[in-house]
Image (cartoon, rainbow, N blue to C red; front, side, top):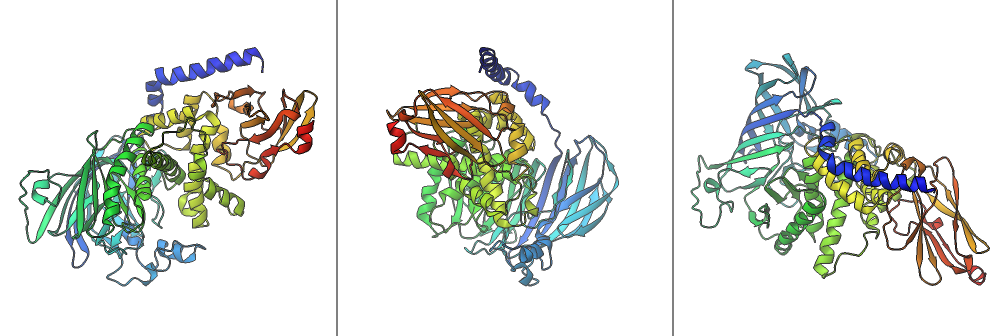
Length: 633
């Protein structure tokens, strides 16, 4: 590389870093994206004998879009738990159904199904025409909601809680009475791509941010937890009061009324059981962690979980962005682990509670606060959450063992955050592009491998492409720039471009929107006098920058680096080993020859990406080791 190019890249790196720091506010302004706004007020009267409840909902809806809206749509998620629903048919016809669902919906009796029945719906006091179509309520407006206008919808409804099958329901396998997720008629999201009134078939969610207020009447013996701050702890008790407070329960007709508010969330979950034991831990920064689980079940592990959850939140605040709410609740319920704003439901009779709690709580960063459309881009939630969870788990494991952090971050964290699952899918012949809508994957297994596995690899491999330090700065900048704004795949990529000064559009074009795979190999290593020629080849279609580490017989190492020409720059050196930056590798060229300024007799091995961060589908051709013959040359 000539001196002009070296100077240009140095200026580019410094300039890009300075621009991000000095013009970060301008960047955020440029990326402002309008958001619709909802404010829910709901009164719910729960009958624990019939598992039904009566509901009153008032919804103030603000149209911040530039468009006038002629219709609106609500989700009626409980309607999925009826024989013949789209979720039922999909589960019975997909090749690899979720074992928790299978054919169970088709066998539900009338008192076991779920439903949400709308009795009345008004806008600004006027009755509206509406039609229930599966899990969607289609509402025809009397007149359009103008851009910038706020209107009020008033609704009365009844719902029946289905038997626990998937995420929500009653009487789960561990005996929890109510896991109340997706339980209320919920306004669908309208964004720059239009309405997202997707039917519910068991996948992901996308919602409108707003303020929620809930008044819930339920049998006085039930303990409730979930999203939101309890407003009347002294009227409730059940461990929500502070030490020394005098509790005066207000019981009316055998019920307590729980009053919650939740600001700036896009969903609201609650769970209730008469046998819940409630504990809480206040972190050093004031965040309150609530833990609700059934008495006498796995008590020792629930007690161990509390300080470890605090440790997890502290690490996440430092490396992924500051958690913006004042509390988080870990609650036994559901059918595995599932995320909700300010809370999670997890099954509680498992050997360790830590892994699932770390994963589900980290969703509050990517699902709860950033809020990408996880139905359309599930990898931006599940994948990034899986990546972050791996780092946190590794940190906690080291801390519990008394180990310090490694001197370098280049150990293969990627293999523990998705590479295995992704590579198995890539080699199966059934891989689908990561851009596939979550509902439309042919196989549940491939969906999981792509959304969780390949999505995690997207982020771990980004550390290989731009450098770990830049990627970590990008994680914080991504959170700060795009919180509460529903970022899309280009938005996170642009952040990584800003912090690195590199051009990265090719990364999504290959890794997200196609199934083209990475496979680089060492074709030959040949001695040429006092030098050695290493011939590299790109076997598969996806191009990548390449780190080649040469280890000499005296134990020293040398990094040979080839950026992609279309990156328009190089990542910085990542280790103390000597680094040689070679001419960029054009993506059109399937082979590349690099010269090592040492004779082949002094070379012990040549390895492509020994850190293992690049998701190469065939690592068998990544290493060359000197034989006895080469050692004698």
